[in-house]
Amino acid sequence: MAPGQVNVAYGLYPSWRGRGLATRAVLLASPYAAGEGGEEAVIQVEPANPASAAVARRAGFTFSKQTYGGDGARLDWYVRDLCAAK
Image (tube, helix red, strand yellow):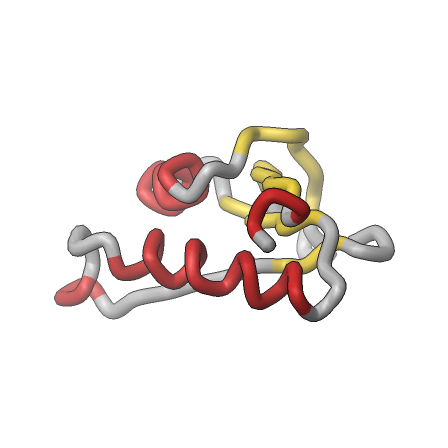
């Protein structure tokens, strides 16, 4: 992560999925992160997890790039400018 970037992560038990909770949590966390000095929020998603990528897109994030984590797993990066979230 670069200076000013904030990592946003979420996880829900299966019985709570599909209700919009993760999207709402990301939307609530974004202005908080902006108020704490964050400039850009990043959600890293494994490509095999389309539901998690859908959360990022619903919360206003856009695909940025694909990287590899420390364990070699591929990760899709979704980013959102936090200036608009203040």
